[in-house]
Length: 201
Image (cartoon, rainbow, N blue to C red):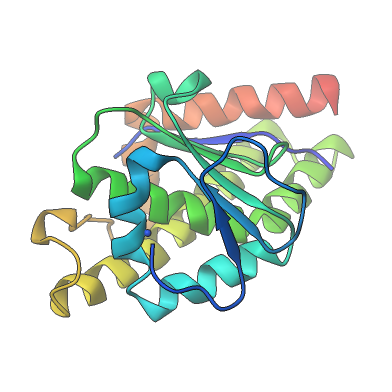
């Protein structure tokens, strides 16, 4: 299906029961494999203290391995992105712990719900949606993932697990959020994604 990097412009180790974690570069392709870059261990450990996060990881692993890497490709320009083609979350280097935590959690939601994006891509490729409709659909898909992220962040802050500066404001009004995304240039990037889907499939 149509897999690509999902980029955000706007703006984890405990005991594991269902997944095995590797810090090495070579890891066996297994639906129960999880790799995290050593630089992100402390943040990932914090995330794993939340049951909701562990459930999210289990959902991702149902589709295959999950890799979390630092400072690769487009993450040098943006905070992070989910690359479905290699099942990897790429994170910008030298971010604050709170920013890393928020970005990883958001991209894990993108990863867990990737089949929804594939469906949107499929509709575009089949000519069943135009560029404007595609941009809005993808923005709404990311919006739902962002709202789910903030819900977990807020619970983590309330429980004293996450730092208070990991709070992330996302408007309850999608139309307002959509306007912000368009002003920030994020929607323009999604439009380019549409062009790639039409051009390359």
